[in-house]
Amino acid sequence: MTNLFCLKWGNKYSSKYVNRLFNSLKVNYDNPFNFHCLTDTDDSDGLNKDIEIKSIPKTFSEFPRTQIFTSEKMCYFNDYT
Image (cartoon, rainbow, N blue to C red; front, side, top):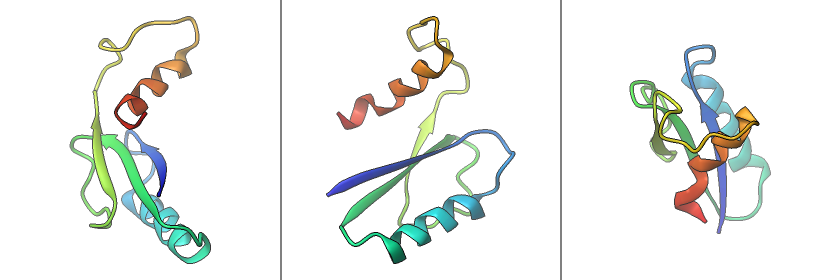
């Protein structure tokens, strides 16, 4: 089983974009998969019920700091390794 992830943070994009990605995968990806959406706690409204929602922290203070900001995002995947 393949785990696929998207990150939805803030309010720039609505849930419809995550749902569109999920539905496109269902149509075009032939292998079984789990779809995970890492999102703000208050921003899971409207997501498809088959999408596994995982809350992300509101600040990066709980992540180890490095010199590369994007490396903190990799901490989200610790539960899946």
